[in-house]
Length: 336
Image 1: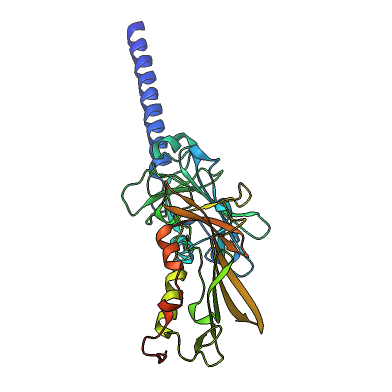
Image 2: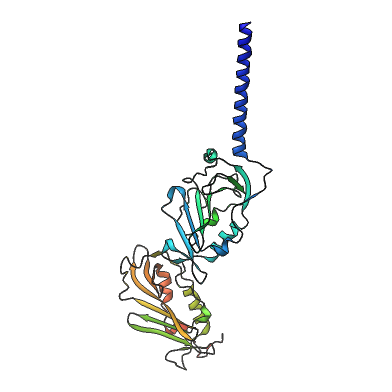
């Protein structure tokens, strides 16, 4: 009789243990799989691109290297983390488009499964959008682990819910995979001399202390040499070609203007372009400094922005054109 009672008691204990295991297993499954019948969860506000004035991107295991973009008063985005270099508008637009109406389904709701999704703070990518008051509008943590190339596991910082979205936003923040470095180059616009070609009304090139070339555009959009010479007229097609080439100069890198002189106390060459704006003459210029033999490039400074770039000698050679390059051979100016 005693043996029978012992067996019954043992059976009850066994059943209880089995129930506990089943419950724990179900709870784990709930934490990882989530409730499929739950409606999609929105991650960002649809008007985020309107109110955002700062973007911060970094990898959790490399938080000291942040990519920081800020919106200027004129609407232009610049890279604070790259000495105020202009950002490519299409890259910023692509980022906001990737976040538009971002929502997904619950796939986990406990910190206990963060490791399964590789979505810990120090293991995933971080994207912060802030308003004009620097207060965060959104802080997303994006896992580099994904079911496929068109999905992401994402959670809101300091929250436990893990959301699966049918979108891959990692390329839009410049982090194409776990090995990618967060350096901002995806957003960087390395054009050193961007301007509207048609708005230029004066070109002046100095070589050393000598003025090598000067052209001025009249109100009638006709270019002339300065001083004018009726027997030597500029080819308008050549002028436009020259300006388009200059507007397409791309730098190898941007440098801190306060670190060294860069050989700009006495520039080798200076190109100055003038523009009419609000009935007041405005100008930008590129100053050519020392030559870097190992890079086959020059230090250049853009004014009035006071930005220092490294520019290939190929571009500098195209910068230096004399009067004969622009002169019409038959003495007749080609019409625009």
